[in-house]
Image (cartoon, rainbow, N blue to C red):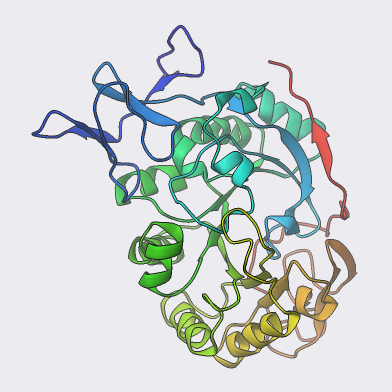
Length: 363
């Protein structure tokens, strides 16, 4: 049990150290915020109090909702199943295009009105027939202590855990955090340092390190998402380099999702992504050896469906988040040719569909 203070949402953390100049440095992510007493890091939910870094959002959420797992997006992890999703506030990146800015950029703790102990979250997931719980909406790396406590409660009830993350985390915390995670969708925002630096206020290299760590050193199921922003990260040359890197460093079986940008936050002057751009990205990825490439945020049944990499048969038909024809065995083999489809398949396909169901959890 974590140490509690007068405010039960405040807990001790361990990934920090004292600098020679007297400041306290948070070591959770490569940003390495250095703070004096009373100051917060860029994420705003971690800060220095009494000479130590503390998390201020343990047990507090912006709300809970049951979603289709494909919305995370995860197309190869318990297809058709329901997932209990929640987030907190803050973020350790500064993306100008953020689509969840009302939570990730919030500096107001009063948006975190939903209080929930880890055991209550696990019970809510069981009660609503969710096969997993997702830490999403904002990056779980910054509330890792809460996420890990929730993960332990979920695993005790046979419920799996999902992290939707930018992967911007330092090696030690990365290893500790992902020990508690069953599947991750990592937001690979672009494939240039220039984009990460100017548009996200971050760096690409640590994200690639996280991807290689997940792909080579863990059993976490991994999928990638890239939001394609016209004129910023959607050139054919960049997509070619990105997808070649994925196949070379992660393997051909890691699914890639290319999603359409919609003007938001500080990039309202950029037009929406044309569907043709997503189709081009999918084509380039598959030409470079990516076996499972998807289009997202647009209506594209073919681009949202899963096709056997060996015989090209349709194995999972999707229309938005609705599952249609399902031609995989319970353990994930193509019924047409017997080839294994990469992923986590455990029994018959689910049929949660497109529903979004808010859930209230009693404190």
